[in-house]
Image (tube, rainbow, N blue to C red; front, side):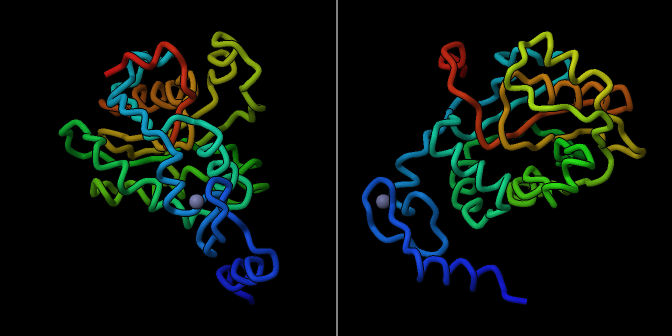
Length: 228
Ligand SMILES: [Zn+2]
């Protein structure tokens, strides 16, 4: 079988790609922007723990999103979700996440927000797992798998208001024993918090005492700018 690096370099050879910002020819491990422009283009949220500003956070203790979800991050997340390309993740996550200080809580483990098994089968992977595999080792957290499942198939929530989102997420998840005492959920993007909060509720109902959510990005909204 032909390896992925060979295919991407062959693609690059046949169809050279250029940086959308400075037009330099991209290396095979670069996408959309060269490594210099990429760092300049992405904007850190610098919000710290913004759980109090989530629209829904009753069961969450902590929320951290590295970048504003602008067109650059959107392009990366799109690559992650639909192509499974993730070679850019270390560059995106490692320098930025040093500012993310987790509360000093013992027995913490990372768990991904699960996809419904039908969606996971169609996609072949869960993009949140790719992120968790990068971020968890930085904090020496184990990644606990197959303890949280999405049992309700939900269509995209982008058109729903906050009440509809919460309704949509009711009874959407279930857990398997034995859960870690503290869970850092991991996902690609955090918007209203309704999905993470629904996961947090079922985790808490089944014995977890601390639940946080970490994401690559969050959309920029006025009410978040003052968070510290
Ligand atoms: Zn460039």
